[in-house]
Length: 156
Image (cartoon, rainbow, N blue to C red; front, side, top):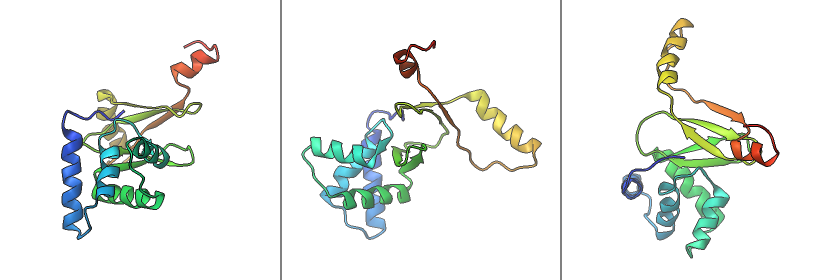
């Protein structure tokens, strides 16, 4: 999952407050609570998971408030929305520039992140071979995770 350095979640929250002020949006307690859950998470959270974590923490913003705040986080560039073909979006903090990729289990929905230096070096070469100027990319690999394979008795 997204790895945040110590204190990085708090720094992202400060950046979100600045974004809100710069865009003449109110900095409310509910927005801060929602942002804290998303920005300090090392997981790809769905809206429902965000709501559940807020409820556990004793906060109860409405679902519409959660959606609107998450949309603001995405607009600010501090959070990235991901669609892993599960019928809903997941959200991850964007702590610093850098590409990572995803392994998605189609059975349990687990999402693991990985980076691969050789892959990153190959992508510009592949684009160049096809006369294409690479601007950005996204790689998602779908399959069955080790835990699910073990549960059904398949070989790893």
